[in-house]
Image (cartoon, rainbow, N blue to C red; front, side, top):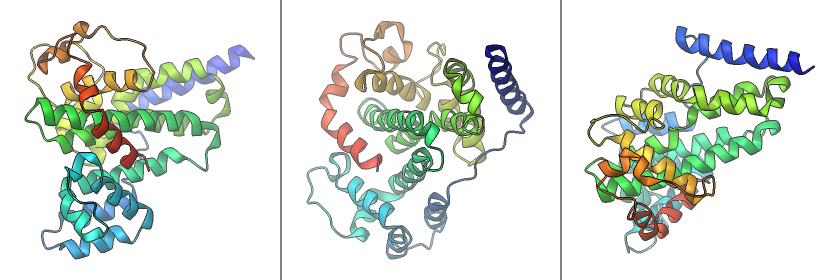
Length: 284
């Protein structure tokens, strides 16, 4: 029985690798709700009123936009807003696009039709939201990069894991081999994730961040989205308890951001309220 399960697992991994190498993965389409918002934002004649109507057509998305607009990351000491048009104006196009993508990805991660993977999908999504919020903070405080693009890169950095889990859900024998599945996700999620975000026409910088965020030694490359997501990914594991401690001086990206082993954890502590507020707003 064990040899049969091992054979099924190896076949799953081999097929995934072959399809990725050949470019024949059955990639998910860009989520509908995010597509509608994206199309509206891409229309240079789109007014704020029209954008508010597009978002308001989905009450849950509208509520999430309101939460993000009133979060500590975006309210900046201002009065809370209760009007969707004012909220969309406050957030701007990049943040609205990110909020719609976060909402769509949460719908995927909820996986009501796939209860067998609900827990691991939820764990991947929770981690992704923390990485997004921390990446936003790091980019804003320590770099000249666009914090909104950093947040988007954080949101999708583990999308390959979501895809692999949903694909594994179709075969109970694959799901039963938890060790094999975990190893498969660790090995293949960067490449799978890159294929997905490229198919969704995300920027090259985001594609590289998805593909290389676990490569600590990237040589003398300048600070980029990958640098920020790499550090945010480790920070998030500490914050949510996936790692007990980190030897920060073994992560070159920390030095590239101008941090040291002594100051590495201070910045997240200083921005804890803003980060948690953004996490609460994004996770639905």
